Length: 508
Image (cartoon, rainbow, N blue to C red; front, side, top):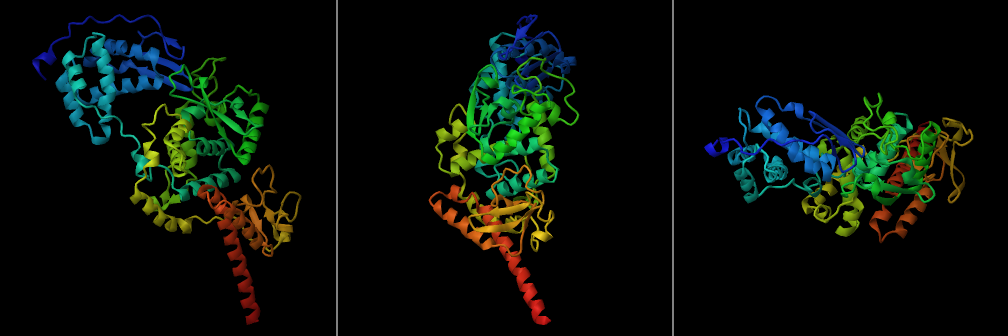
């Protein structure tokens, strides 16, 4: 370290105010060692008690440098700045010092691995503010060095652009397999309704987990089947000042209505959280970060909502050949990437993708319209590899209604009068509270018991004819591809049974 860097700063130790107000209207005493405040559903907590020994010198100046951000930025952004400075100290200042200089930052940048280089850019914003406020602890040479050197930002879009099998969007087969796995888990009681709904709305809207943590029951319009998703990163005081509307499918809408009615019946109101902390967390929150009457009282924090969701999905995630048939990693961010990727594949413009994803500009959406040809070609091969693991029909073939689970009890018969006045099969769950499109959705349901002598070929013909009507629109045409595949599998099973019986008759 140079002599100039070792010199003490001549700036005076700043005096902190007794109270500051955040952008969201919360307040706290910045003189305390712990800063804690709610920002929408997010709970911020900065522990300055970590600054002990030789680091204690930086504590007051760091607080003063963060105060301008407290008043004008999100709690998440302030937390990132705080953690960036802590990471810097952990990496470089391993011996007593009181001033950060040019060489300290240069050494820090040199130690960072390629995927960590963005940290210099985050640190730069804080240190520039530090020097501009004439706070002790950072030299002017340090700020000048940072201004003169390129500061790499966080690499954007690589996971999407390369179709990363761990962090990137789901492939089409993974998408279908995950959708079916979650439905099946819910059907047998291994998945709560809130997790099923979060899976559906993540796929339908592509929002950030903080947006879903901000949802309230009143944000769903049952009459129009529309979900108003709160918007974050808008620069407004909180997420519930701006909304974006998304159409929700009829089946998912019916599930949401049932879910909402259950919550309202348990004492919640239309202004209650859509994903309440008491429901999501098995043991409930250790402490309430919002006071009674606060707009976000009872809401689950984004971190807890994400953690509980991931824990549930981890137990039902289907295998993927892209990871040697290991269970696919499932985190909320991947749903967002999948939503944007599917928009790009459908030909949506960058402007539309940015608007649907809630981006303020177009710099983050380029990856959704620039897929690598090499990766796309590899996907075509993987589709065939996934076939053995992606059987669409998951039910059980039965002789007839008399041999079904419920033996003809009311609600158990599955019909389609467009192809036959007789039944096609039975539902082991008596189709109770089922809002799915019968019999199309039945063929991919684990509760379905198709009858051996039912005219499944006629169902297949109808579905294929409907698919042909949408031949000009690949995505619309593919909507019923999974049921079509399931019907074909049922037909093959029936053929095998009849062939076996003929062989037995001939042998006799």
